[in-house]
Image (cartoon, rainbow, N blue to C red; front, side):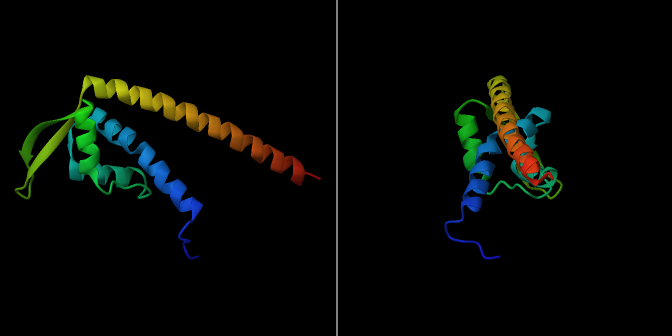
Length: 127
């Protein structure tokens, strides 16, 4: 099926992905310090390859500027490259809690509406 230039589904998908990216990065960093490639790989793998982080550094710089993460230290990777590790801050932990609360409130509201639609469909299809 061809993708239309003004495909609303594609726009919705892009917007949803952008909206949860900060939350996902902060969630991963709340587990452990990570470098950019590791964060990108985890997002792809743990989402079943449905999500990706195309330009992580713009996001990292914005999170650093807002005080949610910091460039903690550098370590040599097995291939010899120096990797910058990022770390969540106390402000970042608080911000993540706010994002998660908002995310759950919104997704629960959407689920309730979609559940109502599903129930209406079932009533229409019942003999």
